[in-house]
Image 1 (cartoon, rainbow over the protein chains, first blue to last red):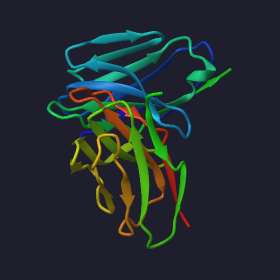
Image 2: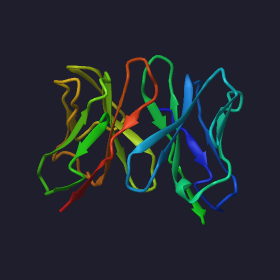
Image 3: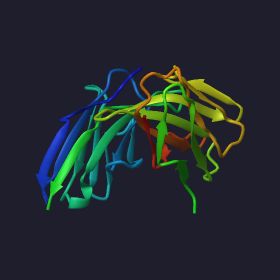
Image 4: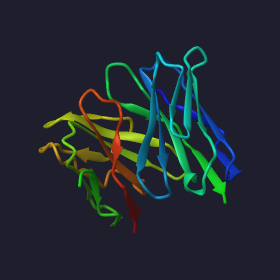
Amino acid sequence: SQQGEEDPQALSIQEGENATMNCSYKTSINNLQWYRQNSGRGLVHLILIRSNEREKHSGRLRVTLDTSKKSSSLLITASRAADTASYFCATAYYGNNRLAFGKGNQVVVIP
Amino acid sequence: DGGITQSPKYLFRKEGQNVTLSCEQNLNHDAMYWYRQDPGQGLRLIYYSQIVNDFQKGDIAEGYSVSREKKESFPLTVTSAQKNPTAFYLCASSMAGQETQYFGPGTRLLVL
């Protein structure tokens, strides 16, 4: 099944810096979502971008989608220690509610 | 207080034993999902159900079984046929026709 792939796998930044992570996928999608997972916890939905959208914002989050390159990026601006987590992209096919998750980016924000 | 609950938080399985993981939601969601997460890996879909009394295999269903007798509940049984069950198991749900999934806190299964 299709699977998102994030790059880079691990990122360590200072508080206040921006964090950017990328995700690529292989076939046409209906939408792409980003989720956050704190260590040992469940996933929390952050943002969804549809295939006909190019950019979306939510608070300090900015997501872009380039369907020609089959890639997406998640930018977290002015990072905080509380942003330390793993971030997963997930792609949704047309016609069903299944999601295909990438392997995740681990982000550590140093206070 | 709406949400998804999973129990237990930790579960220990002896060899040859079947164990059942509980997942309950009071969000009135139609669809429910079970995922397996291994260290440093993404989530892999085990089973999913879009309506009561119906469910479909995901990508790694072998060694697992589910039931969906009630809308609120979607228990997962890890059978003795699953030879490598040690993992973190996550349950999720979503509204019909909505792509966003809501996750429970997870159950960590360990083999004794």
